[in-house]
Length: 410
Image: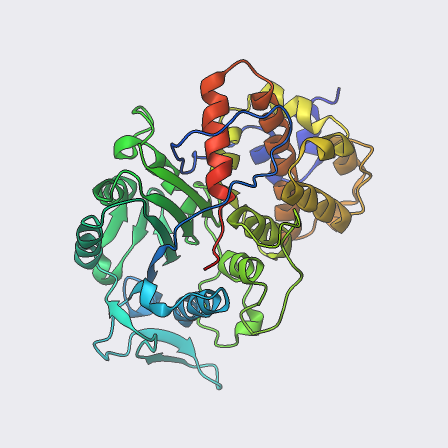
């Protein structure tokens, strides 16, 4: 078996993160039970009640409040309309809100920076800590089984995302907000800021990994792991040039890209609808950036992968993972392998050893290879969990997959 310690110096720097055991923070989890399966689940248990949507976006001041963030919120609104939802179910907080002040930075036709006021329909107010706190307090009074989708598009630091007026929201504060919601609330998050994966600890009580998993059903999708910046905050106006996780995720989810053109269907299991997990898989292939997108179950599995596990998986023939994979995972493995003409009958590491360094000459190319390696580890670890005698890990894993496999359809 090829030794990773020998192989690492032979390839590009990104491999030290994948093969050397980069710490990737676990993502959000959930709690209601699911049956244990002995084969790869197809995740037909879909939800649910028509959700409420909370959108938070913008920079912390005019100089970090790029027009792409406003356009992300507008694209999300169009996505909901495509899927049959009314804007009345959405609460949007953005930057300075609707006070009319010019705070959005953009490049005009001459290449000069300008500022303009937000033009987002039905804004509820500014993206401040006080406004978020008030919203969660009001929502907490609603009884019964509820479904809640949270989308953040803005800037972040490790364990924190930034709000208007230099406000910050930490993982612990975010969990405090979630704890206000009824216990039976199902929470799905999609975060696209730098270090977004650091919000993974929201699965735990108090956002503390040393404490038990929260009672609420929680899962999420993140533009990148908690140790890395992300891309997409640009003052450029032309959306046709936007390449970021939000663009790809919502295109996969709705079937329509942000310029209004149809995209290839992300219904990889053929059930007639697109789950969050399928949209996430679409983004891994579609997104031409340095991002390493992660989901709840993926990060949870990666946390449990030892160095020996990674060594073993990345030395197995790529084709051997396909029968164990869910349909959206098979799509990712095949498409990312095809980008480099990899031989599926050889291992990931053997394939990398044969690649011409000229084929890995950009952050985007390195990111594609990183995503493929992570996908193989995810598939291998999932198979190991499913065939283990660890009933609690099986329960948690099945719960994560069930949450991620829910979908937006009115």
